[in-house]
Image (cartoon, rainbow, N blue to C red; front, side, top):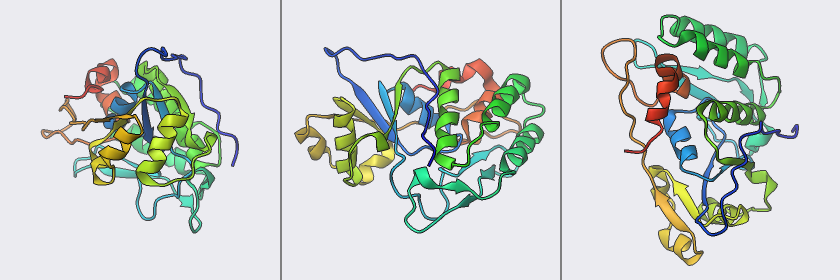
Length: 244
């Protein structure tokens, strides 16, 4: 894989005298608002790039945008091998960027913030790499910069951690110099709070609940890509990066 090059964000280094919160997540494709709400809670955000690429459908290679019929998926065609790591997955079709850009332009052509959101989408989709992981990390980094998020960004492969599940998370938090871990609600399915306590790591479980905003049509459709909020809200998206 090509060396992942994280676009620079403000280097906010936590003071040694205060807690340092870490969040860890797979590098998803144009993820939803909850992904960035978690980033906003963290001092350090670690992209989990050295784990197995998920089998079946995954948010690592697809995202959902608005449509009149319960949303539509933007899926990136990838070439996957058996037990392949996320960082090693390549694109299977070089033309997917153009198709996704056309779909966004058609879907949101009447959106209130079309021009500025379309410019950002075009910038992101012009990123040149043959690797899914590298693309997703650069895309999320640019979106984070656009949103003014100041957490430091790292990749898990930069640490010598080879354990699994919550043991891996604990080791990554320690390796990053963290004293606390920001977890989504789904983490309760596999995390052992006592392990975190024994390791001296404060476990902060936060479940993001989307707040409705104006979308085309009558009913709010939650869980869509961040781009949906950018097309409809513009700078107003910042109000939706908070936990209830």
